[in-house]
Length: 307
Image 1 (cartoon, rainbow, N blue to C red):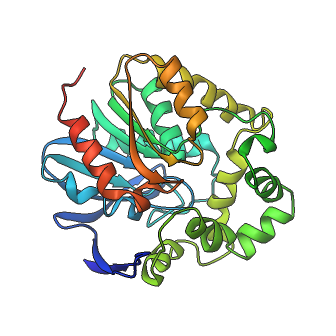
Image 2: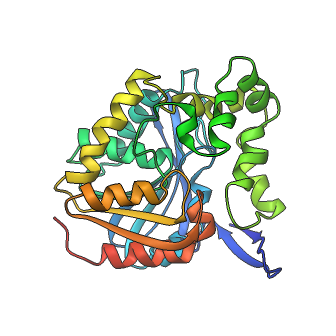
């Protein structure tokens, strides 16, 4: 176990254990590679899924408030964190296949899945395809709609992601300069990451080859119907989020980023049985910005009845 000194905007520092107390590192072999995760706690299983360009480390300050009443499993997606980097394309379908294989190897059934960013998209997709695996779901800051054009990503976002999706430019920024980890990650939250924390996020991506999963996730964002398979997944996920019989929770920040006021209003208007909870001020990386509020909201929701 290591101690990570976390940066605080008010100048106060605190330590967060990694892995959290009562949890440990583990890994299993699946589909010719390995998936790493942290696991611990007692009770019903809750599976945590991160997005781009993070890892299970994202959840380090959310998990301690839940391990007393839940068996928590925080996965590193394939190609990220401590998981393997096999010679695959790292498209959405690849991640979905490794996630499903992981769930089957651990014999996960009727579990709660909590997803952030692409982890939210994967969680909704898994609930749709494997309702035997997923019993309830909580998501935050994931893609709820495909984008009709880059400009729909909001001020600044459209120009940035259009550049990152431009052949040659994206490779230079993401693969050569590690721009998504060095700039987008720390700039995408309202608190300061300490040097030690940023080092943990950097660790999985030391070389150009290691950074390919980060670039591929950027290329998977559905814009103007491209890529078509992910566009179709996100559209199917909308019905899951809004109307699936499984208990569903949308956690959002204010003002949020990927899930902003318009998306929250849409969910309130169109959702049936969808619980919506604000965790307070925050933008995209809510587990870094509002870990205690997320943990408390999840604990309260987990304490309610199952379907």
